[in-house]
Image (cartoon, rainbow, N blue to C red; front, side, top):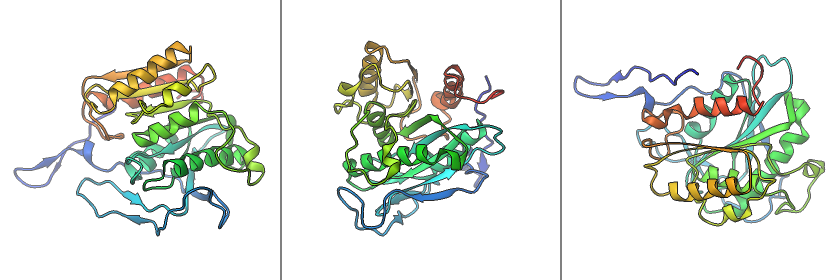
Length: 291
C-alpha cells in the first residue's frame, strides 16, 4: 500500500513556511460535463434565491460556494477506461451553509479518477436547506444511473462519498431505498435510490437520527475520522455500531489526530485515509484490475 506523500513546504519568507499539505491540490485532468438536476421552474421544495457566489477568500486555498439556486453536478469521467467504471457522487461539506467545492469536491474527483473511478461532484442547495439538499442527491444518483452508458459507468457500482455535512447527506441516502421525497419528473426517476456503497469522511450530524434508519439493506460503508474531531466522533461511533448490529459490511478507520475539514490535505495521522479507502474499495471488488 502506498503512502500519501507530504509535498515540500513552500518558502513564503525567511521566517514563514506553509506546508503544502494545506495548499490546494490539483483538480481533474479531464474536462467535466455539467448536468442540471431539475427542469427549469420544476425544482421541488424550498428554493434558494441565488445567484450562486463564491465567498471571499480566507487565505486557506478553499473555494467556498453558496447560494446554490440551480443544483447540478459535474461528471469527471475516469480517463483511459477500457470498460464501464464505478462512479462516485461527491458531496462536499460546509455545514449545509456553503460547499467546500474544491477541497472536498474537485480534488476528490481527481483522486477517484486516479483509481479508475468516475467522479461526480454535486452542487446541492445551500444555505439552510437540508431537505432540498436531500432531494438533490436523490435526483443526482437517479440521473447518473439513467445515463450510465453516456459516461461509461457501471450502473450497479454507483456509490457516494461525503465530507462533514456531505457525509451526513451521503449517509441519509445510503440508509434510504424509497420512495423519493419529490414527485416523479421523468424516466430518470425510475432508477433506484440507494447507492451501491458509501464512503463517509469525517461525517457530521450522525447523531441526529440517521442511525435509526440503518437496516440490513444499508449500503456497505467505509468511514474515516480522527478521534480529535470532537464535535462529531461520538455520533460516528454510534452510527458504526448500528451498522455492525445490522450486519452491514462496514469499516471504521480512525486515528488519534486529524481534526475536521482536511479533505485530502492533512499532514496529521488521518492523512492515510485515502490509502485505507482504496484498500477497502479493492476488497469490495470496486476497483479496476491493477489499481
